[in-house]
Image 1 (tube, rainbow, N blue to C red):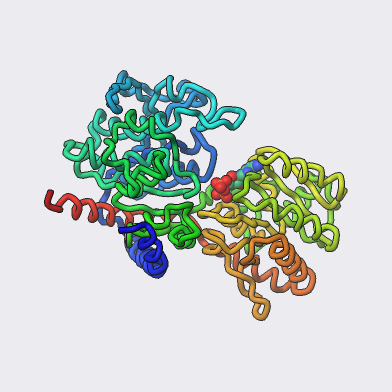
Image 2 (spheres, protein in one colour):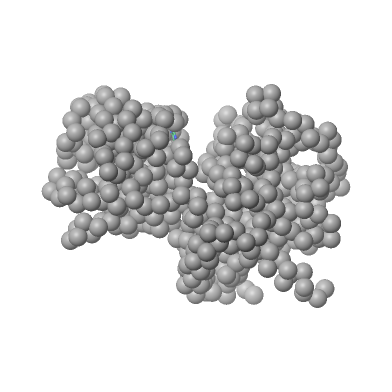
Length: 532
Ligand code: ADP
């Protein structure tokens, strides 16, 4: 099929993806009540909370295995033993003294540590000093990508499977995440197709962000040992480069991403960063499953980082948090002024280049306060960094990473701004809802899925949305929230109650993943039954 034929098919996939999502949710609700079958699940990932994190991927791999284990599933996770993961500090036990991993024509030796987590999950750490014995996960301190990344993560993908074989674990499902472990889906169907431990394993690939695909020069391909017959446009090849994520999509028995909205967007021609046709080709084996929130960490009732706890029934603690936040950032302590906030990485995706001029204008024209926490782009760091000097008592900023402040901001602010150009799922808007901090979001991906737009006639909704990611679009939406604050306080109150009642816990998402595993297993059985 020609690539453009696939594009035209992308549109008709929309409805199908939506339907699949709905079907998955309803099936998931049934399976949540009583897990019929218990599965053996092997996850391979480059990140996992609490051991190594650069983004949302780590949160998911930190939470989902635990939730699955709670239901009785046997979950093992393989991650690299990065230099920063100290075996003594984490109490890691050596489990495989030397494990041989065949790459293309080369046998790599490594060792494997194990940690049995209290929640029942077993984590394996692959130690290979040549690949992981350095600072940084993907790049050095100057943000230069490590040149051997395709080898490092090709090796991780292959080694993760070898851990299963060498520990005698025969998973029903191998669940991999993003380009870093995507190649495991291909190894399963090539090298391990008749392996006694892995020959029957189905594979699921979760895409946390389609912008990062693992695109590298093809001279690394021999090392990966995947065979040049997989280096074609439907699998590992993109304009004569290796594309690890695309190859994973081709070989996986099921692919999902982290929200139904983002699944829809990345199958449209302008979404998906070139992956749209390949995702569309997966038919009903591609859809979105929303990430869950760890409410044990992110709930105003139990949050350890905030000065006062609160709930939807009693918001007194929220007022105390707002006061603490105003003091912390040197703002005028005044409960009447609406406090807008933002937290995140200053990268193009997050839309802070729209926020900077929009909030600047709002600060000049409206009676509002603003705080921001984040780091990244040097220009934005400077701009937000000197905002407090330009708007004393009205604007506050912290340039850097600070977990405690992120909790205080979520709890103490009134509105939370997320102008992301695209957002696969987004966590901060989910936290905001829980803390009664009304999100102001660009209606895209997971933001569109999880925030309900304010209805000025009835006061319904959980936040404020805008559809055009422009400075004006954002500015006027900030204005809309501001006028609602002053003119319709009863609506603000109602929306806070609405927002705090929404449930984005892992319960729901976990059940949906189990349904996905079932579908992947069925797909694998069908694949195995094809005549060869
Ligand atoms: P992404 O994974 O694309 O960065 P998400 O919204 O899914 O975006 O998750 C971001 C997570 O990182 C949230 O938990 C957020 O609170 C946290 N975070 C981002 N920047 C900072 C920061 N500067 N300080 C503390 N936490 C931060």
